[in-house]
Image (cartoon, rainbow, N blue to C red; front, side):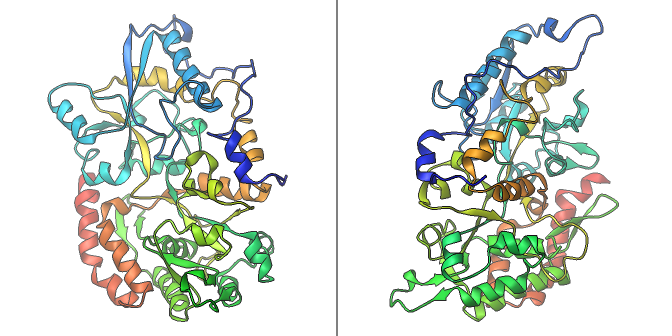
Length: 468
C-alpha cells in the first residue's frame, strides 16, 4: 500500500517507532513459563530485586530504553511494560544512561554488580575479551526458549555465539531495526525515472537485478556538465566507510570470515568471490562511473536527486532513528532494495546484510542472577501492551514505508542478517585495505593474501584458541 504523504509530514506524528494503537485496551496473552510447580507466574516474588539495564538506546539507534513519559506512544508502552513487570514480580527496573564496560569490569573485580543486562558494541565486547574471560554469562544457560522469537533471529544468536554457547539477544519485538545491521541500500525513484531506468524492484522480481544491470545504470545515470563537481549526478558513490564494498562482497556469496564445520573461524576475505567483488567496485571507480562521496553519511546528494542509490547502516532509513537520516531529510519517496546479485553468488540463498563490529547487542553480566533472568526475560521481551507477534509491526509498515515492497526488503535484511565475525580481526586495517583496493592504490589479490597469516593469527588468538 503506497503512502501518499511525504515523510516530512510523517516526522510530525512519527517521533518514535510508529504504533498508533495507544488507546487499545487489549493485552497480549502472556507466554511466561511456570518456574515453580506449586506457584503460578503471577505468584513469583523476587523480593525487590533491582534489575538494571546499562543502555541508553536499543541497539545504538534513537529508540530510548528510558524514554520520557508522554514523548511517544511506543516509549509509553515500554514504560508500562516496566511497571507491569515491577508489579508482577516485585522487582525494580532501572536503566542506566549508557553502558560503560570499563566501569563494569572494575565493579566486577570489586564484587559489585554494575548491571544485569548491557547493550554494548560487539567489537568492544569481543576485542576486550569480555566473553572469552568470563565476564558475561550465556543466555543458553538460562531457562528461556531462545528459539521463541522473543530474543531475536538465528542471526542474532549467532552474533553472540562462542563455541556452543549463546551470549547475545535483542528485544526483537521492542523496536526497529535489528541493531546496526549493514549495509542497507535505498534508491531514489525520481532519479531512476529521470534517467529512464527500470525500477530495481521490478528488476529484482524479474531476476534481472545483477551487477551487470547496476553497471548499466551507472553508465546511464551520469551528468558531469556542471562546473561544480559537487553538483554532478551519479548512480553511486563510494564513501569513507566501505558500505558499497561490503555490499558487493556479501552479494557475491563471500565473507571476510567464515565459521567452518568444526566451529572455528577462518579468514576468507582473499577468496576468489571476495576479490571479484572488490575488483568490480574498483572497475566502476576506475571508469569514473561512480564518484567519491566523501563523508560516510553521504545523504545530501541522494535527497537532492543527485544520486540514484545510497548505502549505510539499516537505521539510517527509519523515521524512528534520528533527525540525521533519510526520513527527516528526504522530501519525496525513497525505496528500500538489496544490493544486486554477483556472478559468483551461486544458487543457494545468500545473506546480504550482517551484524558487524559496530552492532550493539544485549549481554548478561556473569555476576547477575541467572534465575532472575529466566523469570523476567520471557515477560519483559514479549510484544508490548496492545500488540501481538502477528500485529506488532503492522502500523510500522503503513506509516514508515512508501510501498509494501520496501517493507518486505526491510524485513529481509533485518531477519536474514548474520554475523560477519570481523571483531576478531584487525577491523580498521581491514577497512583501509578494502578501500585502498577499490580506489586503485593497492591490488586486490596481493593485498588480501598478504594479510592472511596475520588475520588468521588474530582469529586464533581471539576466538579459536578459546575453543581448545
